[in-house]
Length: 374
Image 1 (tube, helix red, strand yellow):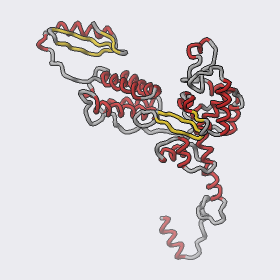
Image 2 (tube, helix red, strand yellow):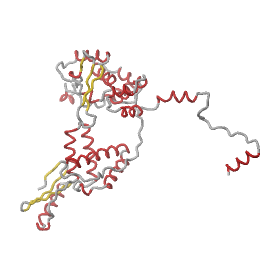
Image 3 (cartoon, helix red, strand yellow):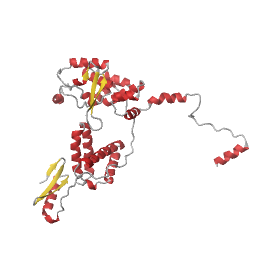
């Protein structure tokens, strides 16, 4: 009888110690295939070869990804393969996959979602194939058929909320929520870094905070120390002293006592769905999320004249190039004063308006002008 593996059904036939298997999308097709296979004479069965199917590859890589990466990264990769398996037969051997298969898939993602989304799927598939080529047995063949040309993208600058919008939202909060927003602003922290912040990460004597992230090559947790501003220190000390669960390991906790929050009461946050959106609606400002506050911190530091190296240290990028790209993606308003100053220069080095044609005075100039115009 067929057995279920993930979302697929595996049909199997065993005769005289030999086994034959095939993957199907539903149980009915698997049963039909088993029945037909048993009716075939054993001598016409092809020898079982050690091949890897698209389904085998996806399962093996996702098992690795679940152990290696953060949950959000694993979920992203899982979603990619879920979409891919609806477009290509999961039982297809990887040796038969071609550039055409992946080109058709990525093109469809571009049309239905966006060029950016399509390229993100492409990136994940390239990484998955490279992993299979190195670690699976048998190895996935070369060259990598996922390495097709990237789709054109239309990218807008990252949204950076105005400082006044942040403070409008901030002024609506109290207690833990207010301290959490301070932590996001003063540390330029990612959401998971603030949610996972523990008492062991706070050094009040040295006035510094330790943040851990997996958003780096290899997926290992890496920790960095950042200065704890005086404002943030005072707020954290007050909050830890007055919070209702004194012995909790984490700084920020789910304290909602509503029915749907009972199971997670006293535990660190994993999500705070609708929290920022609701605050923005109450403050009557354009919606922004936790990560936009990281953008805001970088933008304020840049406007204050901080160097790329200083901003890199705050954002904790491994490469200064990443920081430079990050700053560039925040928008172009920083160059407005330079362009305005240029437009007001008395010396017209660059002409913003076309010059008026000068009057031609003599016959020789008329001849040259006629020859050029003809």
